[in-house]
Length: 202
Image 1 (cartoon, rainbow, N blue to C red):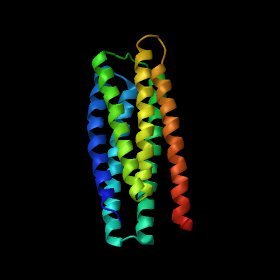
Image 2: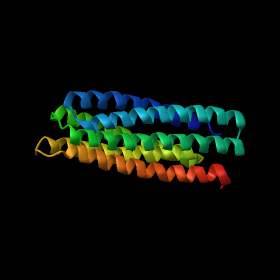
Image 3: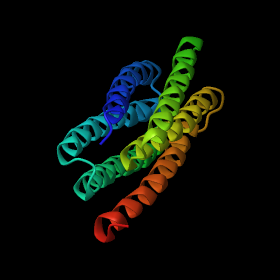
């Protein structure tokens, strides 16, 4: 068990929690569904990193044996479940916005805050990839993939926020559906992968 895993988890907790607070502020201030959902996504990522940290601490006790690998795989499985439920939450909120539409407020300050969050999450993803190269872990792999997916999702949310203020059409809701679909699909792939390892050990 490598101690740099702990660094990866702690960095993930710090970055994701800060992004959660920033996006929650923007989402509530602008009445943007997709930004709000993106904030919830970062809160889920924060909990995922907390789980990862606990998993790494347990793995340190077990050492680099099969129990350690299974512990990491189990944590990666739980993280993937959290991500999948987040995607489904996006889809649910998208449907809710379609049924009960509301206006969105857009300004440059909000846009720059969201763009900054993309760079922050990309930097976290790069850090996780570099740390994972030292000694691969399914947990860090899941967190790194989620970081890069979040960059894409956040760009979608910003685009949706801009469009919905220009035209009388529920772009916000449809972007929530799209983001939810992307997140859920990737999470399901990870769930299948980790389930296979937990059952067969391969």
